Length: 353
Image 1 (tube, rainbow, N blue to C red):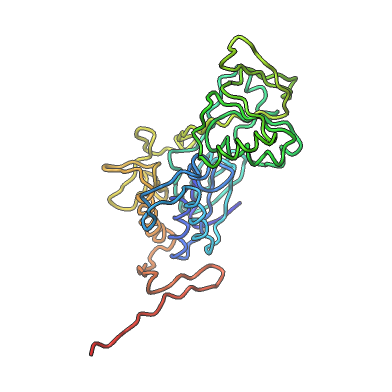
Image 2 (image 1 turned 120 degrees about the horizontal axis):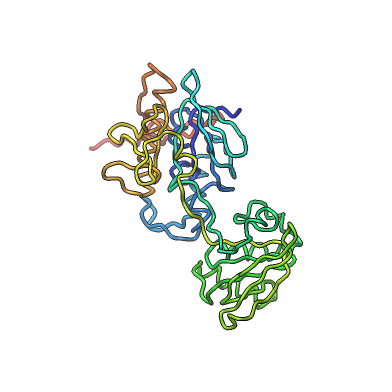
């Protein structure tokens, strides 16, 4: 059983900033995310997409924002359960909650903060009749362990950042990498497109465009894929492979959280924004894009604001009767759980003559 003060469902920007705000109040956090790494959409879907509305940053890449949020929260030593989806929630006699993942990992906390962005992400699967027969038998939708592909033949399908970046990375791991895309143009970052072209020219990547994968071949385990090129639609070709990785993005869904007894409106969780973003279940909050209320704006900076107020309310639940005094970090500094302390700079007083 993993025990913590605040259990955060979702390790995107709002969830990560919650760790920092909770840490200022000496509250420990543990985060659950179905993705294999922290960052949510920012790290999984568009790590190289620039964001323009983060205060103090005229422009910052989504992946870099994730790195900075992780660096900011690191001093408070959050725990992570990654690659697992929050499945069930059970309220205990002491009013705490036990949240169990799809892999059976149990977490207990007096406060649960749902910061799942647009929900749990499910891969968009290509329309191949027998693809479910080969899932985890050669077909993967998310790359969790790159070493799985060492010295293997790999086929990647897709035209975005994930398809490009993983093709580049696995070109130095797999025995062969083939990238198949239905168009000649890619929608990923220009430097990634140029790198793939360079690797193709050097014989490190086999690039097939415009083309689509049409079938999978194997006896319980994948042995080959079939594909058709746009200029020869009547000719089906076969390519031997050990792994087929379709990277067509992720589809956001509320997932099992929709069955937790929460008030739901248009696939979002209704909260009381007049107070603290608490849901209809006392002790369960929803912050960031996953919630809804009158005037809601789905912006990262709004999620940061909601996380701050939620942590203030969480403190009162965890420490009933204890007075909470708001301290500005410019005055009090930051105390980490490791015993270190970052002092706030002393004010400079100058006498006016």
